[in-house]
Length: 78
Image (cartoon, rainbow, N blue to C red; front, side):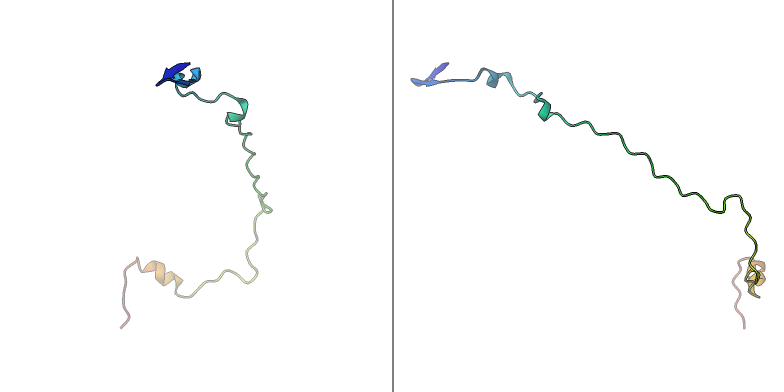
């Protein structure tokens, strides 16, 4: 106990010890459970099988070869 101006004042002994981290179990940060495993990939249905070409053939536009033979130069038709 301390006396101050004739009044009796009680001082908690822990007050002068400074701040401390709470150590009670309910104050602790909970441990996280381990992460779940990653999502499994879907199996490929056609793995290892060759695809047959389409019955009607592949689309072949008539000017496709001209596009690649041009070498990337831009020419205007006059």
